[in-house]
Image (cartoon, rainbow over all chains, first blue to last red; front, side, top):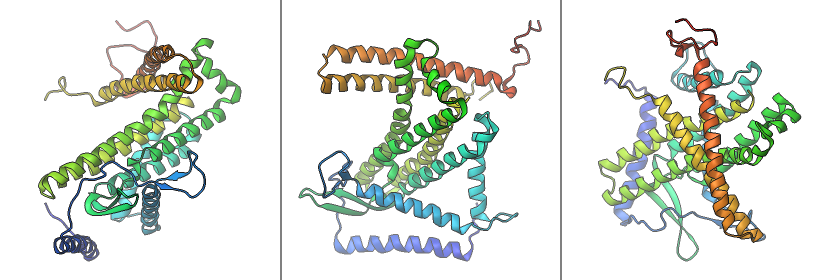
Length: 279
Length: 93
């Protein structure tokens, strides 16, 4: 295999490698200990007002969501000028988005809705794949401590993927659910859309309602289960063998491979849910 | 591996999706029954009723999904089997 790296690639990889070596040296010098306390628990922050269901936030999800959005925006600014002969980053983006566009084109029968549905699907795909891939690199994570505070772990765990939080996935699935019905109303009209719940016979109404509610639930839980389960499994195995060959490979499998596949499945399902309602 | 023994991933994913639809419907319906029991004080028998109802709904919705997939499969021109006439005509045999 021939690797042709430019000078900037080498600098980029060197900085990342140097950073990991520096943290490793820090851990060896200060006697940093790996610990498995608080695995699967979340750092939850109680907002100063009220006790209601919306008064608690998950700070790490919010922070990492902004980080992922920042990464995507940064990526977009890097390839702002689209050339006829694409560079590396542009080819990567083009091949990814082209694939999503083909998926949308194949499943949406109405021509005028291809572009808006592609926009939704591509945004979801980019967000989910970047956040899943972030979850495959060792980095900083936070767990609640026993006295109510927070413990930050460095390199003992992967970066926190926002998609390993069920709230985020439910929000994304709910967004797809709402958008699919908005498109259905626009295509069929309000009356026909309402009538579609009473098909084939009127007493099928509750069954149709349950079927519709089950869509976002299964949509969200599928992504959550895969990412969260992968994260915990990689963490526990990483704890057992402490940075030998196995966890690195597992991190690669659960983060990069499953992450990319789950992002694709999430996008395909979003397209399928929207297109099945506007046919 | 010859052509016949090859795993058909599309069919596999359709099957998986069918299973997920059934399970999700049972979960949602059962959750609904539990909420009714917990907050409206309805009897526990409603939970089992809603679970059964969810199973029925899941199979119905799953079947609908399978029929839709089959329809799409037939619509796709590349999948046309030359020996079978699925245009609704009298057939070519």
